[in-house]
Length: 336
Image (cartoon, rainbow, N blue to C red; front, side, top):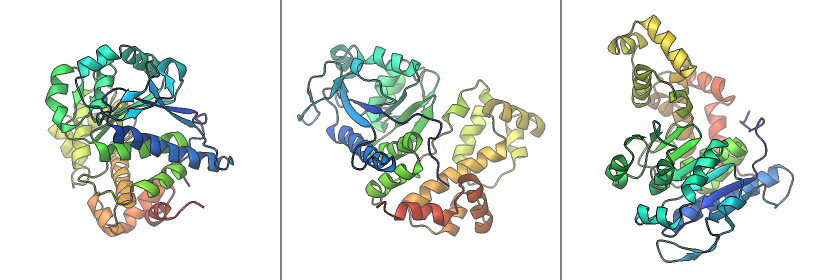
């Protein structure tokens, strides 16, 4: 069983913002990933080599832009001419205030697109655009480590997470750097095109990437949009300690709650029971390790908190419909 976006309409357009000072490699990395996805998506829909959707480089004035490395990059459309389901804000180099002055239409465009439900993602300094539009106020975000202090000073209302490489909240996705941007792209392709297309692109692009981190857990951001501060603190603790041995009774006690009160409040805030939430954290991490490392199933089981590999395998199948080996093989096979 694979996850396909059955309830969502077919993906029509992805818009990648192009501005002066853009990091060309990051911009074209996103374009290449989504063009690969469009070809796979078109083939899956029986369209042969016709792309399933369009990936456009957009700029406020539809003029070529000059990248950080002084390359001239042609753009495809103006901001007002596109109606994308996904907007990507690649990294840039330079004075952000000058960019805002140079491109005053970007911030209102992002606000309008977010209000109509468009997914918006950004990498490294590109996250500044989302924050400037006020979209990240009160929400979790991340950016490249060199920008932490500047970002915090400029956007104090944003919950900057300096430990995460990827964050998601309310259809807003942030990646801290180049490698995490690759992982984020695959997640977004999975969400918009289905797991078969995403896994094919991952096989074509990510096999040799050596990460200095465990691929981030994506998909839990929406469960943090609540007002229970104690439960949010526990969610953050679980993300850092999901592989540890602990009792929920002790976690509840450490946060001044009885186990019954904790169970009730956690479910009310997140929509999940604590054990199911923990299992999802572990399984999502295991999926990343299965697809990006050669570790044995037993080792991965232990890495995510399960001493019994057989129990882990049964739980993995319950959550994904596949055994760990079947899931891994999807990344080793090629689509003909």
